[in-house]
Image (cartoon, rainbow, N blue to C red; front, side):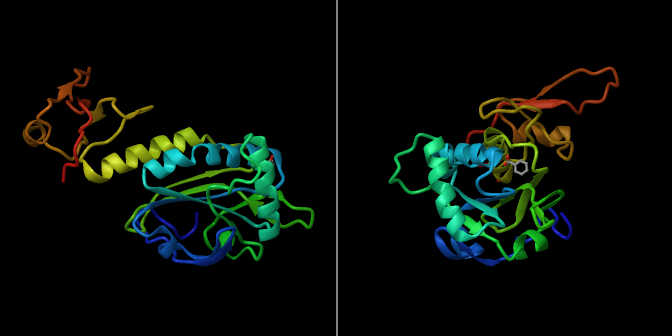
Length: 228
Ligand code: BEZ
């Protein structure tokens, strides 16, 4: 992803979407955002992905996250394809697709945001957008990015899981271990000295004994309230 680093302010671009013309920062307001691209409308893997994202959209809303899709297809194609996605999901034919999809048919965003997959090309030889995920915080900073090739579909449950971790760690001085799920114990980061850990985590800190004798594998119950 050339040029964009974690912590950078996400570009406040303007674009046409299925919800109308949008300016990114205004559209997000105080919400978190997930901007994700797909290679092409009317393709099988993309249909399953946007179908799953649509099914999970109430879960994203519960977490104050706005989803935004994007591809190099035109607006009319997005509108028409949305009906296929809803039929794939067995959703009511007349219901509205739950999140906007940006039409980047002039490829301005996919190029500037580094969302292209050079391995996958359309019939005229132009590279398609990869399966890119950007998580943007309420401060409009980039919190996480994931880049998949066109041939590998994403797991939107994982995207929800990382949002749970990002939101927890935005307000608490903890880190989440492998395969963490909300409610599981979390880890005390190495930057917190032992003397501070016991006051910072009154629920207790468990340190695993290791052959090195180093006391870095420290667990504490997940904090429930926002700790600053
Ligand atoms: C798909 O969504 O099925 C797809 C799109 C582009 C390349 C490969 C697969």
